[in-house]
Image (cartoon, rainbow, N blue to C red; front, side, top):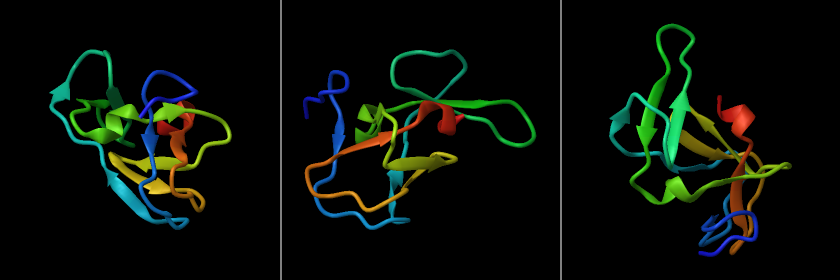
Amino acid sequence: DRSTIHGRGLFAARVIAAGEYIGTFHGPRVSADGCHVLWVYPEEGEPIGRAGRNLLRFINHATPYSAAFEGFDLYACRAIQTGEEITIDYAEAE
């Protein structure tokens, strides 16, 4: 839906509990930055980029944030209410 943060956003369709798995960022692997690309920095090896192809590509940055990625999996950092925009901190995603 439309976001007051930026363009489109990702919104909760139901209440999401703190710590709950929200979804996995899916898309093809990429080697260059671009629109809707999420980078994961493993402890060993090169960064891995994916160009988002599912709804998680619409997640926006905000502080305080409500969710965080563990690899390409997204989890709620706190309870998120129905209709609330789900946000991450880009610095935490790296």
